[in-house]
Amino acid sequence: MNEQEKWQAVLARDSEFDGMFVYAVGSTGIYCRPSCPSRRPRREVVQFFDRPALAEDAGYRPCRRCHPDQAERPEPNLALMQAVCRYIDENPEHPPTLDDLAERFHLSPYHLQRTFKRIIGVTPKQYAAAQRSQRLRTALKAGNTATEAIYDAGYGSSSSAYGEAGTYLGMTPDRFRRGGANEAIDYTITPCPLGKLLVAATANGICAVRLGDSETELESTLAEEFPAAKRLRGDRRLQQWVAPIADYLDGARPHLDLPLDIQATAFQRQVWTALQAIPYGSTRSYSDVATAIGQPTAARAVANACASNPAALVIPCHRVVREDGGLGGYRWGIQRKETLLAQEAENVRHEE
Image (cartoon, rainbow, N blue to C red; front, side, top):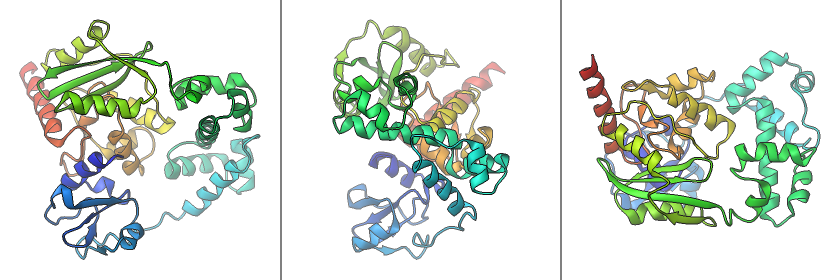
């Protein structure tokens, strides 16, 4: 999460983000959970920390209302699943099968798979693939050749590495090694009812949909995300995708089924697919989405996946709200989320 996304969670007092970070207030010397009921401070006096200990090292005291220094009830199987993760990490060249893991940790394959997915968020196989991809990413950034990096990461062949590359790297290993250089991304920015709309695409599909207040802001965030790519502004090719999004914002198109070319972990892909299944005019809680993907205790991880959604509207994360019906956070501003939900609800009422 970037600082703007964290600030939106603080403004919304979104409890789904408790435990992901704390915020500290320079004028009071106190740090809090995102859901703290205290009055919201000015943005310019706020700092964010990933853990309470880091806030205390910086000289801040825990809030007496939300007690951010007090850990939540521990997960009884967390240590065991962390041990499973370590064992997978220690065997990169020969990732253990589910049966191998079950035998080593004295669990049935079914119980291990279910418990691992509930706590870690993905299956052991998906975890091994993601870790292998991370090793590949690190080796490529270090300057290793694609072939060296592929085998050092634990891939048995270059074909298996290239097969996973689209999911985990967003591009081939060769292109990733060059930092995305020569990757062509077309983008356009157009006025819309919510301010400014940016749509960006590769040759394979949409890679970003952003909402903002200014063209400068939107171009800056696109440059941060794709620093080595050739970013070309032009309206003609993108009109085929901008037009349906504009129709949606005008209430003339309830569903957006557009091609996407986005990088995602296995868990993010599960969440984003579930969001696209939420009917127009309806909402779901973070817990509802977690249950829908078969991970009922992963509500916070779902909230994090919503906050990292790269394609506003096409992946309708605005339809996910808090358990108590509150709006929760929204990457592009809570007011936009409120407007979108109100418009969808109104259009559904007119159709009935």
